[in-house]
Length: 252
Image (cartoon, rainbow, N blue to C red; front, side, top):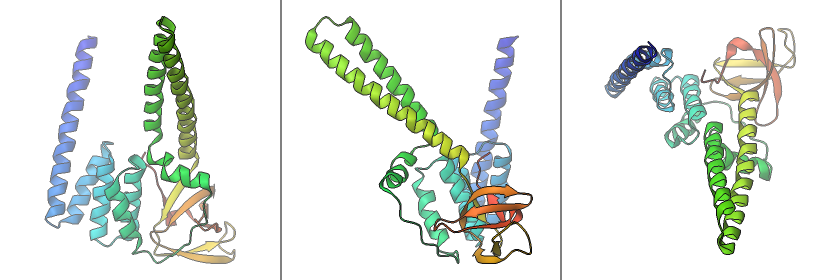
């Protein structure tokens, strides 16, 4: 009975994957022939099946860019990078799409650690770091066994040193994994979808307007109160806007 259930699940997944591949191919064909709205509808069917990927959101971003929908194109390029931070095509197209936005916000200077984190550590998803931890744990374990069973003093010294180095790298990678996961969970970013939105100094309609933002601008969400969200810009400015004017970046 268990074998039958396993076979049934396997066949179902195989058929589902084939359907997704067919939809992806159809959507790509629609995109190449300039039928961008139809391509979007087809890509969204894949998204509804939860068979998402960095390539899916990258292609969606391209479709919206062709339709001059700035917020949607930026939103999907950002989602592509959430899944795969190393997607160079999504990075390049995101830079091009951001040139269509009206807001020009100067980023606050970053510390050496922040630059290291962004330029190197965040190049990999926390799942990739977790895989590195597993690999290093296996290597450290094997080297320690070689050290334990070796009778040659020179080899024993070599295996001990290399196993300790592997163990230190393992601990470092483990810390990075937890840090990246914690950052991913706690950091909520969003894209402005309103053509123009008034940013208030408090979560009320009659509060003072402190500045305005336009579609496509990326913000960090700090808090939510009723139908208001507290946001922060890369230049440090903080304010409140209506939740309906932004869309949270999430791959779930």
